[in-house]
Amino acid sequence: MRLDPVEAALRFVTQRFPEAHAAIVGGSPIRGDATQTSDLDILILTDREEAPFRASYHEHGWPIEAFVHTDRSLEKFFVSDVRRRRPSLPNIAAEGVILVDNDGAAARLQETARDLLVRGPKPLTAEQMEDWRYSLTDLLDDFSGVGRLDEGMFIAHALAIEATDLLLLMNRRWLGSGKWVVRALARFDPGAAIRMTEALEAYVRCEDKEPLLRFAEGVLAQAGGRMFEGYHRQAPR
Image 1 (cartoon, rainbow, N blue to C red):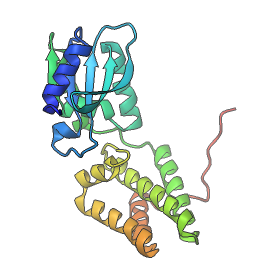
Image 2 (tube, rainbow, N blue to C red):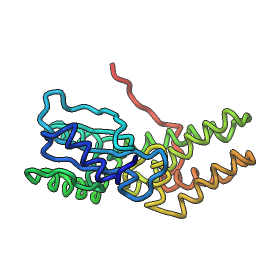
Image 3 (cartoon, rainbow, N blue to C red):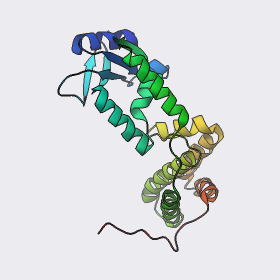
């Protein structure tokens, strides 16, 4: 029997982590866009010696992903998420429901995460921008020249993600992965998300490259255009 997601999460934390001084449950069931396979993401703060760790469970009718941290380890993981511009843990903390807050840590954590998300990622440096332009140029050339649909589908997928990521980063928006690629783009620009998905569909269904080429070329033009001749990076010695 599947319990209410918040009730299920609270029972899980109480039974499995009774010593936790803070816990927040997030994920699709909390946002209200769950599917039959959605799980509960639970961020737990504890002083256990084995923390930090991540573990999966199936309890109270729900698949559960537990992200178990100490205060210090969570701070380091937040820094790592910000550096890679994919704020997985901050999203759970910011959007979730507080389950346990014995000393105010959960409320402070949620406020910190929300402030972080509002600020957005750091802008790309000039060197990083050149790297993205070079990578996107390379994918565009590969996609333009590919003659086989089986190979082209994989290049098209990579091209759509690369162009989306660059568009988001140029506008200081957080990146996503998997289904969150299109969700992140839709949050920033719903029209761009529609154009990108329609462009992918046009290639897969009709082998029509033009819509995806236009989408990626448009993003590249905003970034400063193609980057190939003159590109140079020194490898570590």
